[in-house]
Length: 86
Image (tube, rainbow, N blue to C red; front, side, top):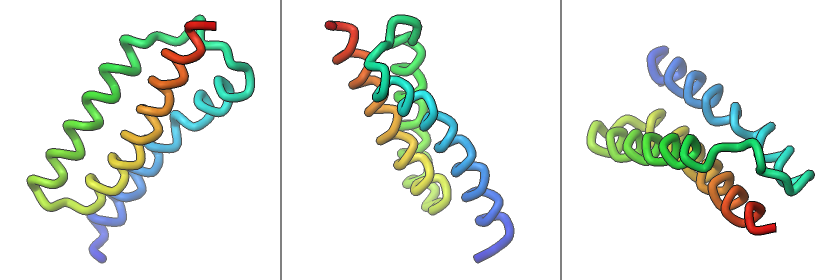
């Protein structure tokens, strides 16, 4: 694996794990009042586009890290929609 791939994975991991504390907090408190659905929806759409871009460029660090990020952001969007009803 080349240095540039390691750098790409490291950058992707940093971005991917950044949402985990927010997901954890929402999961524990079940409160989403101050979290913007629009912001997370736009972020999720952007990450989905990064996955497509990674596939088109055959860039494994982009594909792997953004696929995980996409899953986490979709979970957050689900939490926002689900817990807003309560």
